[in-house]
Image 1: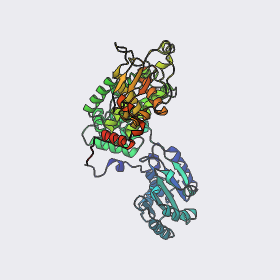
Image 2: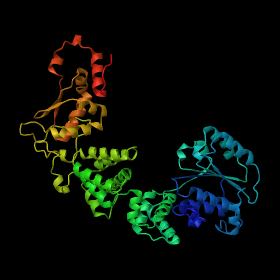
Image 3: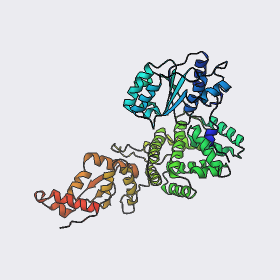
Image 4: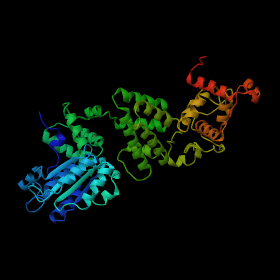
Length: 500
């Protein structure tokens, strides 16, 4: 049994082993070879991309006495990095106060013990306080000739401009999937793991450009006994490409029943709702790029669906799914998002030539904030908006109107749910109990929202009316007690009672 986790065991031991950061390595090695060292470097980029590893290699190389320099792995290099007195690593997350920086300033004048330089590596430097940055500023501006600073951070935007301007900045890139998969394959071979290529591809995708995360996932998966695609999906809660395609088709067709059946199946198989939302958002991102002509794909199913999806529609789906990834209750948030997306206008699935002959209402729903346009002479409605046998609008579509309104004005939607609704041939009438609720519904901005949402769901212009009970409306205005109405409304909404 190994006494060291894989990401530490396979940390890069030379510049030659740094993967995916050729622009950084080539510049630094050239500077070392030419004797043109800077007194301060700033390494920025996502976690797990090699910032600390390169900082340690730099610390070893600047004190190397071999030839040529840097020689990466000669005894002189190894002696340099092993001299802890000349390489000082500081974790700014736990040493962020001005006192820690003052202590550093007091010791920086001391000469190196073995090599020519003392190297100070300050990790997570963005965690320093404003006072600590001010104390560090003078040292960075006029350091001793034997001192070299390496500042590493994942959040460079939090550093003062005065600090950044006194450093040479290197931006570390996220590791590409191809480099990640190749590196994981080499580690698996060295450790004699039996792996499936598909499993490594899933791990590389889940790592999101971080070598440390990818190697840790491989280590965790290897502990289960087999690095297989099935095991990787179960460990990470991933959905398959086929399931993502099926769910995307259901959303595009506004088929809420099929969409919820797929979500239930995914939950039963162990897929995590938050991870499903991330995968689905990435799926629609690819569709957005394909439909915009910015990407080609060898997945025929993805390409076929992307050809029927306008870029604006794909962008709306992505924006809605991103809200799910920030939720503390991802399962419920994903269900709500799918309900909201399937309540919108279905995406046409006909060939482009045939779609061009259809009215605009079938390809692009009216804006939720805009008044519905006059009904065209020949309209292919997105919803089954035909009147019921008694000539009324179908009541079963009203819940979809409420779902659509919820994303625009949640409080207005909640009030609409409180009262009974009557359906006419081209109009909808709500019967609020209180006059101030009626006036709220008829407020021009709210009325536009309601009528636009109804037009979007029913597929034709709908007039919305709000009328209080006739007996209540007949009461003289002077005798009305607004405070009593407010109390009564609050009791009805909150389910309370008056206690004498």
